[in-house]
Length: 196
Length: 378
Image (cartoon, rainbow over all chains, first blue to last red; front, side):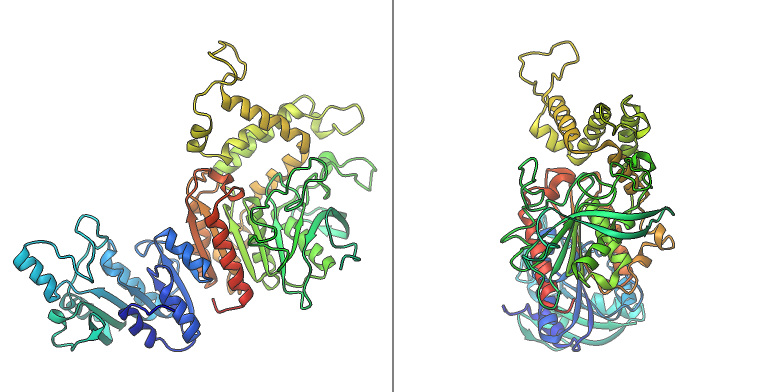
C-alpha cells in the first residue's frame, strides 16, 4: 500500500473503527481503501472524474460518479458518521453550500484544503507578481480546477460566522505539523474536523 | 452435476402454475428456456443470473443452436471474463413472453390447443423476474451472488433487487433505467403500429399453416428501434452519406444510401428470428415498467434498507437510456442508504455499447463482482 497523502493520513488516523464514511471527491479511492481495509469502515465515495471512478469501482469500492455541487442532496440527514471533503472545497462552485450539505449528511465533517496564505504563495505573489505554482498548488492558473482559493484564516472566519464547531484542526507544511498560531503563514495544508 | 438434466445448454423447464401475473391474469403453467454454465458450489453461493434485453435469448455464451452465431454476451460471460464459469454458476433464461422457448404469444394455450396469439395475457418486467425466481427454486439456488443485465436486462435486475432483496447480493445494471420515458414509449409505439398495420398481422392470428407472418411490419419496427440503439456520431462514422454499391443517386426509392441498406438488412434479418406478437408483448412490458410507481411513487422506497450492493454503468452516447436515468437510480439508492457504485463510461457506440468491446466496462464489473465475492464491507 502506498503511503497516503499527509492530509489523508491524518483523516484516516481519526476515523473510528467501523465508522460510516462518505468521501466526497474521493479520487481513485485511496483513502477509502485504507479506511475499509485498516479501520473496517463502511466507506462510500463520490468522484467527478470517470477514470477515477472506474479505478475505484474496479478495486471494489462503492463509488458513484457525481458532483459535490449537485449530487449530495439525495443523501439523508446524518446518514454518515463522517463526511470527508479532501482538497475539493476550493474546486466547488458554491463551497458554502457544499459545506452545509457535508454537515447535514455527516455527524462530523473532515475538510482539508491548501492554504493560499502559505508563505511561498505570498512570496510568489509579492515578489514574483505571479500566481503561485507550489507543491500544494501544482497547476498553472489557466488549467487549475481551484476556483475558490482560500486561506486558513478565511476558513476560520467562515466557520465562526456560521456557528460551526471546530472539534480539531491539523496544519501541515509538507508532511510536518505546524502550530495553530503560525498556521496561516507556515502551513501548506489544513485539515479541520467540524460539526454543527 | 453433468448427470443432472437441470443443468447445461438449451434446457427448458415447465414451471407448475398457477402463475399469477401483475395484470390480474393467471397462467396455468409456464415454460422457461434457459442455459447454465459452470457449477453451483457446495454452499450454493456462486450463482449469477444474466438477464437479456428486448430481443435476446438464453444463449448468452454458447453458439446459437440454429444460426451457429456465438453467444450474445461473450465479452462479459465466459472463461476469463468478469462472469466466469470457472468461478460462477451462470444462468441465463429466455424471458416470459418471448419466442425463443419460453412461454409467449406463439406458445400453445393448453385451454384451446391453439397458439395464444393476442389471448396471451399482458406481462410485466416483474412477472419476468418472478418466473426467473421460480427457475432459481427449480435449480436449487436460494440466493444470487449477482444479477447482471443491460438495457431491459438491467430493468429485470432492478425488479429482482426490489422484489427479492434477500435473494440477490449484488445487482449490475448497465445502460438501463428505472422507468420507460415518454420518448421510450413513443419509439415502441411506432414499432407496434408498424406491426399492427401489416395486413398479415390479422389481429395477431398468423400462426396457422399457410399463414404469412407480418414480417414487413416487424422489420420496420426493428429498423426504428435499431436507430435508437446507435448514436448519431456512430452512424456518421459508419455510413456518413456514402452510397450503397452505386456511383450516383438513383433518383428513385432504392436503398441508395449505405445506412438505408444497413437498416433494411437489420429489419429483414430480425424477422427470421423474432415473433411479431412477442415484440408487441415485450415492448408493452417495458413501457409499463416504472419501478417508482410500483413502490408508492418514490423510487427510493424500492430499495429502502436493501443490503444488495449495486453497480450501475451508463454510456455517454446512449440517448435511449441516458446517464440521467442511471443517476436517478443512484440518487434513490443513496437516499435509501444502499451501497452503490456508478460510472458513466465514454463510448461512441450509443446504447449498444454495453454489448460491444468496452474494456473499461469489463474492468468495472470484474472489480465489483470480486469485491462482492470477497464479502468485504461496502
